[in-house]
Length: 145
Image (cartoon, rainbow, N blue to C red; front, top):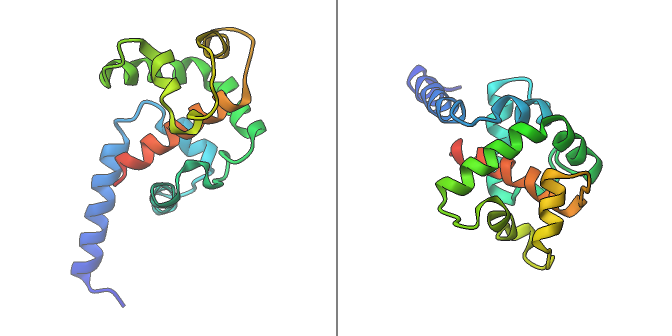
């Protein structure tokens, strides 16, 4: 059985993690997609994401159909978030350049046009959509650390 001090320390650590998570613009969308029902479930899932990577099979982020549905529902918010991230990370070529650097796409040999059409058009390359979904999940997991 945990002591009061251990429980208090654990609760404070969870609160700090949740405070950092609250700064992520896609928090509610990702939590919904994961199906997390409590703060501790969310933090546990995000710890697993940090350990094995978001492409390791997490509810809502496993198959292309789930990730495409996530992309379709939240395309505008995700795109805005990614543009902000690209700027913050210093990608001079913007969002397309950043996406090309995703480790999930390192062997994909994608053209700028394929990425552009996925981001802004009706073309939706599943490997690009999957990589975008995994990126935002990984990013959130790192904030929870």
